[in-house]
Image (cartoon, rainbow, N blue to C red):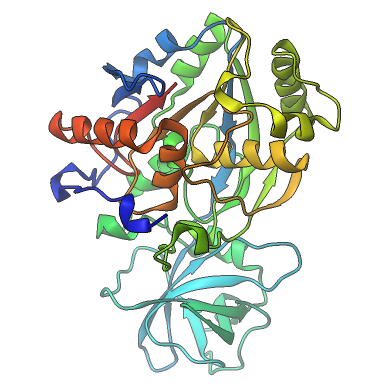
Length: 386
């Protein structure tokens, strides 16, 4: 299976460069993944497509203000993006500009801009002993190891995540070709963001509002949460031509017990065992047709939620590192419907959506959305695949 098979022509004018004026005022395309039927709707009307007892699962990760503007001792500007941290491993960052092991960088106030330069990644330990006439050692990081593929390790007196919150700015996707504004600080974050740790937003959730969540609850939809910290894989393209040769980076996740309990109840209603051995039963079940007619559905708000639930279905693990790569041919064991946004060509998230909807149906929906002038990518419109 080739990466080039999952490509489409995305006009530049269809990429949303800024968030909509009002959160949730976006459009919604509803795609029937069995028939390919397309319905044009609005995000505010999402409740029309969900029913009492349906379970909507949200990712409650919080995006770090992980973009740091820095200077070398000679005044040259550099840029770092703090990446997710896994356990006790050293911290890693993505960087712009050429760096070497031993380089000392001083963080300067957010809002400064740097000219576009080649991208790389860096990790952390203790501050460099560089001249510091202004007493700013608490804002310095040292490059300790260049890892390749634009990755390096760094050291600092203060944890890098704390430095990012104090001095960083929003890590907007590079395709927006602009610096973050004060509006982005609020809008590139879900309204329920709670657990700090993501290097990027779970963007399918950016259109959801408290008002709509309350409307869904009033209808009898059950709202539950899990955490997956969006990580390095978000930034890296697929470098292999064969999809099967691509290895996903791992991302930390946690599914609370109350979310597991609700999922088990839905699986029990569909006559799937809910014991700790359920992952074997799920593996044997045929995803989309496993439910009895009229049973509640499990709906993933975003590909991050879908990946986490399907990783759990296969392993039984409720916390840890998730490196699942979902592409066409994959059988979904838990997710019955997916709310997502429009993804970039040849991306891993496009392949996940293709695995769920079928590439022919999904590509046809994308062509329809382009023709109807839907807005694409992180700040764009949404799609419900059910």
